Image (tube, rainbow, N blue to C red; front, side, top):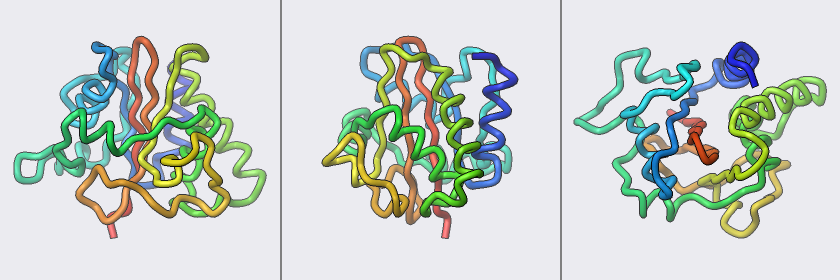
Length: 182
């Protein structure tokens, strides 16, 4: 995986929607603490690769002392809202972010978006990688039916709606989040 390919895929997939995409180092067995460090913006990308952070770019990094728009969660609270999913489901969720949580659009565009999602996930390797999401459908299956998009979630932000994917490898933790700021 090379930096230009990964960064181009991030921009094509998530730059036109209200999303957060960042990676931090894996420093503990407890991946939730590492994911929270990324969400709280207390760590930088260990490779120096691009981060998409609309709120940091627009000066809304903190609201009342909290890392906007994420809620102040403990590792235990985050763990309670996240459920394991397959890497294929994680890729599909990244594509659904592009389609603003709805059913995935025309097949040609979906093929390109799916290739970009696989490029994003490829950064974390193909072995010893686990993926998690806060969508409700993942509570009962690591491969939920997503043909109608995302319809339920356990919030981790101050918005009416949010869903995301956390990708955990032995070296890094990637956090990809989409927000419904209505």
